[in-house]
Image (cartoon, rainbow, N blue to C red; front, side, top):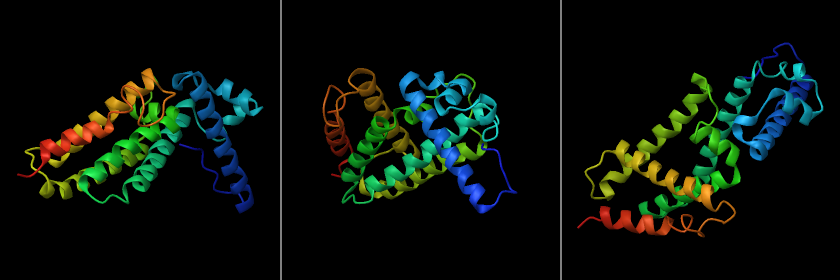
Length: 208
């Protein structure tokens, strides 16, 4: 978590927050270019034209910095998912939009996607506060699945439905990024499969 500074004036707090944002932006750029696990405080300081000890005025350690990035990643992901699915007209439409939201978030934010969904940093464990953001998002998904149950024919529980969908979303997205990351949604071996997945689920879950 970030280092608190309770005795600063509003102007100083605003300046401090701008610096924290700059640090997070620079960290994301390094992670995107060199790999999520390649982030170091020394490289980050050089990128920002600072001395490395100055960074510890904002983050207690590199793991604290990763924690802030994990928290940012799930916050942005939750916003992106909500924006994508809010206009859904049917459960099939909502599933398609959810798949597309997961896919496009990963393409637009590959460094945050990897940190949040693939855990590539040895030794990093999100703080309870940051982990709670992801758990709240998962709980909201279970609640949406509960509302889906009366509309479909399935013996799966709401939790099993969500876990199944997460597995499928992650599989398609991870394979696309590993093989054809330059191609947009709807193209490539795996990026083109979302409509087929929705058709399979619609057929499997259709009420007779």
